[in-house]
Length: 498
Image 1 (tube, rainbow, N blue to C red):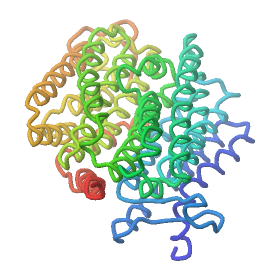
Image 2: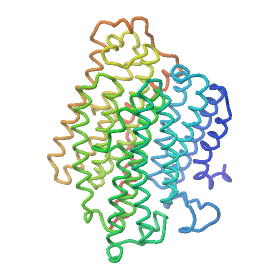
Image 3: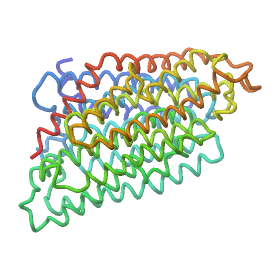
């Protein structure tokens, strides 16, 4: 283990990448699924080992590829922030993949199942690569790897609109990636470097000759990344993508993809521009604040009127992304801690909700709220998990969602933004309505024809749902890991700025 420890950053990417290569040659879905399970759980173990290294040492863990010294070579760099993100991505992946074994057999044709796991592993590779890379252009490469595999995952849905949703995401995702690479090009023009830490050390108020390209780069990077993370009003691709993707893919993407994009935005804002200029100099934070509040309210309001439960949760995700970016905009320790811990908490909560709907679809072939009437009596464990996660989404005390909103409220009060506190509460009340619609249909209506013979799904589907629902309660009571890591990362980010 001692010999392997220095190579953990690169192994974090290589394990799912080589597993994807192997599964691409397989013809049987079961064999590919076993490979994906092994890779996902090994990847989780690596992320835990990396996080332990980071917490034990005062400095980030650095791995230089090919023997090329920084800033000329590509560096994988793990600190408290991306160590936390690696844990989120791998935890969700390790829970999704057992669930997928049964769900994929139901929703995807036999000759395409191995291809599904190949795309899942490539998407996992890309998300982990974005999180671990310290090189801006290498981040773009992994961004494309995750995006291209995501397009395929969405297109594999059986609904006739899945292909259209995938194409819509492809167009918008390509625009976002183009904006990102233009921003990185402008930074390279000004600094001559692609290493994120090196860029931060080279730019600043003294670079008057390149001040306009540097600020233009900030604009391009902000728009490009916000398209990827679906910040309102750049979210139009997300509802259809989540609604029509296969259940396992929708749950995985809801728990990971937007979180990694948010991480990238945080890295750009705080580790580059915050270090170079200071946080109060840049007006982009006020723009992010206003868009976050709009997302929290408008997307929550939209969710209320959705008849399709997956689309309802998709709009809810747009609102919850608003909570995370609100923490970025508050830019103090409490607010940023709230945003970061909500990345973790929302990943667990929303993955649970999408997996529960996947189990419902497995049994009755529908996720229309009307078709789920009385299903709480036929699928008690599944809907109990959905209800618990839904309470976390609302932010009921004793759930993980409450912890996130508590920190955000404290951060807003410290800033003197009392109207923001009121809007956080208002958004939570809207969540009561749309979550309550599903719960009311499931428990307080007579069973519909579609659910009369339904039962809880097989154990491989049910256990991950129950585990994540239990974790959403556990991390609402014991916050030492989640909020502790988030606060440490927030202090690191804010402490490194001017």
